[in-house]
Length: 305
Image 1 (spheres, helix red, strand yellow):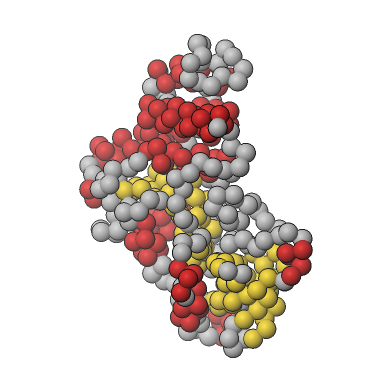
Image 2 (cartoon, rainbow, N blue to C red):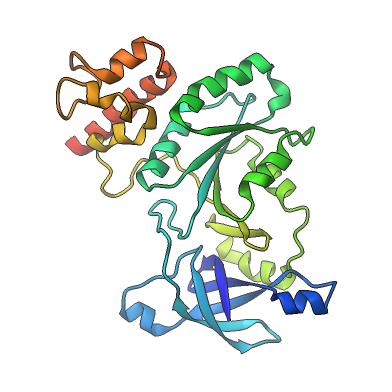
């Protein structure tokens, strides 16, 4: 039986197995899938392999009635993120508020850089669009669309933009992140309207006692479509990430880097810099460039100590 690990806590892995087509056809009131509480085989420990949230795995069912099993095999991973520690991610959806609170562009750029470094495409969602004018929407787009990012606007208050989010997520496993107070939970709740998942007693197990700390967790939306709610992302501490890598994580810089006079240009103090010329010509956002300089200094100081 094959399923996807949607949560891992204290050595237990909760594996979601989608309902087979035959079961759906036989039972119109089907639950949509089953969650199994599993332990991992000891051989994984010997091989120093740790199952990750997002892994597709083969399980052996030990008790069908109680939905208990063992993880027997981890299928090949499409990718493996370091922060958050998850696998098989197709896309990241980062959610900020359009206002109340105003977007923290530095925090947003940190997340974008981390995902670029780990080769994960990103869609940006500004929620609470009902609090800003169309002109302000255009200003937010003008910062990130030239960098190649898709920018969406939603309002959980009016329901605007939610269908577009659902369309973007369809058929993908998407990691969803964002600071508190931006309406991330409300959006996730809106996306789950049609979920019919057998979660009752398993939810109690997952959230029991000391296990209520934040963990990455996948939520099945429908067959083949999953969202993953992840903990915060304020730190740039991704192993191997150095200040010299930072400009490559700004897609709009890459186009102009060949016009720099010096190889290994940091795009800060050097003369004849293609990136700074593009900035002067309005082809690169001043907001993005200012954050680049701040993050560069942060990484430089981290290397020094």
